[in-house]
Amino acid sequence: MKEHNFVVCIDNKGYEASLEFGKIYQVVIDKEVEAEGLIRIIDESGEDYGYSLERFHSVVLPQTLERVLRAV
View 1: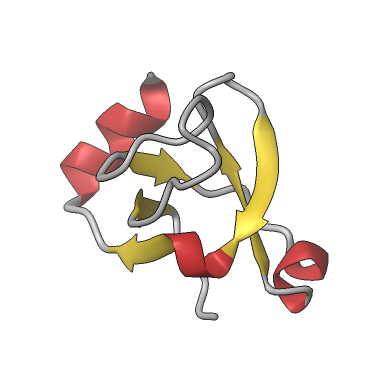
View 2 (view 1 turned 120 degrees about the vertical axis):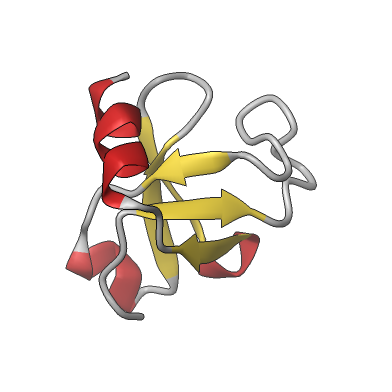
């Protein structure tokens, strides 16, 4: 998967407490996890965890919006 900074959750089944469908999440780049078909994101707990790549869709955000989201 190409390197990305933010993704949108497109499948939260089984993880409703940790992931919100349609929400944008910040990615923590981890090549080892991605090699296993996972992506590490900062979820609703505020911590980063690995989830199946199939649960997310990569998005490109305008730089201004990306800066604001990173600051939160």
